[in-house]
Length: 83
Image (cartoon, rainbow, N blue to C red; front, side, top):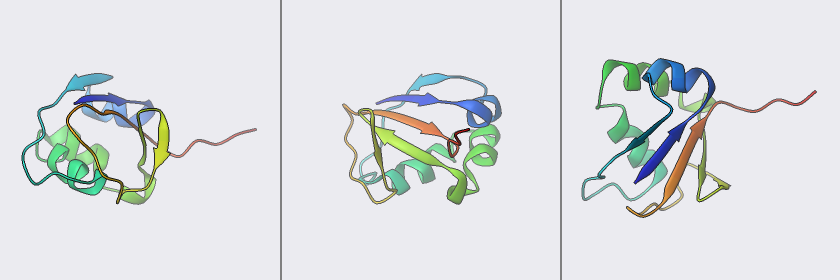
């Protein structure tokens, strides 16, 4: 799975993109965020406040209960504000 990070989430994790092999049992965005949080202290810290984590799968905004598969592109970012 191709995962892209943006803004302060990218800064906390320390990279803007990574390839992750998701384990069996990771079927939703929520599961994916749980799994990613185990990869490093930076991941855990950046993803701990889930209310501030937005996600897009294959360039479409989705909720945390959205299903995922290994071939998806997942973007993880904070809320976007306009002005």
